[in-house]
Amino acid sequence: MISVKRIQAVVIKDYRDLLKNAYMLSTAVIPLFFALLLNQEGEVQTAAVFMPITLTMVIVGSFIQAAVIAEEKEKNTLRGLLLSPLNTAEIFIGKSVISAVSSLIMIVAVVLIGNIPLPDQMLLTAAAMLISLIIFISIGTILGLVSRTVMETSVIVIPVLFIFGMGDIFKTMIEAEWLIDAMSYLPDQQIGQLLLQLNNGEAVGDHFLVLSIWAVASVFVTIYIYKKRRFD
Amino acid sequence: MSNIIDVTNVRKEYEGKKALDDLSFSIQPGETFGFLGPSGSGKTTTLKLLTAQEGYQSGNIHVFGASVEKLKDPKQMKRIGVLTDNTGLYERLTVEANLRLYCKLYDVSYQRIDEVLHEVGLTGEESKVVSKLSKGMRQRVTLARTILHKPELLFLDEPTSALDPVSTERIHSILRTLNEEGTTIFLTTHDMYEAERICDRVAFLNKGHIQLQGPPRDLRVSHSDSSITLLLKDGREQLVGNDHEGAERIGAAIASQQLASVHSNEPTLGDIFARVTGKELF
Ligand SMILES: Nc1ncnc2c1ncn2[C@@H]1O[C@H](COP(=O)(O)OP(=O)(O)O)[C@@H](O)[C@H]1O
Ligand SMILES: [Mg+2]
Image (cartoon, rainbow over all chains, first blue to last red; front, side, top):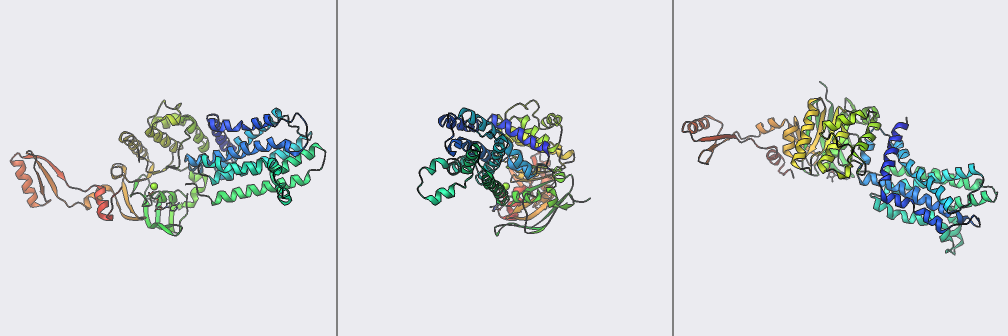
């Protein structure tokens, strides 16, 4: 049902296109500056040390994903894909690969440059990263679906960046306990806590559960919005 | 022979607002069928319905002898090619990269790229970046991409609007060749010359309803008032009827060596459209 060959064709196209896209490329390296700025020198004190990772997921995972989808609509190329033998699943899988791979590359770069201490449990860490990527790429897909142009995407990604990427900064400014409690369920907070507790050798099952719920929910919302939305 | 497209009593509304009303027509294999109408008359909507991009409230649409819904099956989808404003090219990529993507999607070999570029007169342009191409060249690349998989049935939404006359002529000649090779073509246009030049049959669309349809020549003949204009050598014009008296006056003009030329006064499709709908095509 799903053709790897067709997905591959979309990925190759997006890859070639990204290499020619100075705006996207320069956006993709922004997390490196955060990593330099927030260099940890290898010490884990709070979950905030992992913030550059979630920032990378928002900036590279969500924003690039949103932009490549919005651009297909803005430049009137999406209809061509929809009228080809590609099915919807193939289009979205194909269009997610580049932002997923770029995110992974940038996360590795950010971890190295920022001296971010990842837990020794590589398998669990990798699983957490993958689940998080599903969440942030779905969010990006939603943003791409609801905006008509790349410009609109760059605007609506800003609140997402604040809420889902910089929670650690906001937490220090907020007084209300209940709000801080509520915020702790946001995916970026969950990832931070998960990585911190893994580092300290504590149990992380509940964080995996919350992240998985986020992942499933965001995929469903994406599908719902796709079905509702008109493209031309 | 069975029809390739059959539309019966189709009604389409957008949020309660009527876009197409009691639409009926059919297209036979090998025909070039033109939908002629001013902006907002429902041409694009019709094309969207015919290519299963949108549903409709009532009536029936059959394509290739089956319900239009069947076009969503990739096997059926491969039998059609669609060119609209929304089937554009990737501007940062080369002509070749654009065509390669669609070769993979439609499972055709890269060798076909040279063939289609030859067909649209763009041999040797494959390494140009699309954003560097003129509008006319871009449209020809889009057309090349649309016919990459040799569709039996081609849908074109105003394929030459906003193109210069030379590019328009090129597209027309490509379409004529495709049609001679057996491709059935459904095209929308608001250009009566285009309709006249490349369509075997046209339908006049006005406010979502077909007002008149038939071969352009038949429409012109049946709406002609049969008068004939004589242009005389001294520059005067004479209007004569297509009757006995007219024949005598033409004969007299020839006898006196005054006749420069004879013109039939068949109306253009634009004239007929205006007469039937009370509206101009633009
Ligand atoms: N997506 C839509 N939502 C609401 N109304 C629409 C939509 N698409 C087209 N229409 C309306 O349907 C009518 C026909 O439009 P269209 O088919 O685009 O005309 P044409 O292609 O002949 O210019 C117009 O009145 C237009 O405003
Ligand atoms: Mg239109």
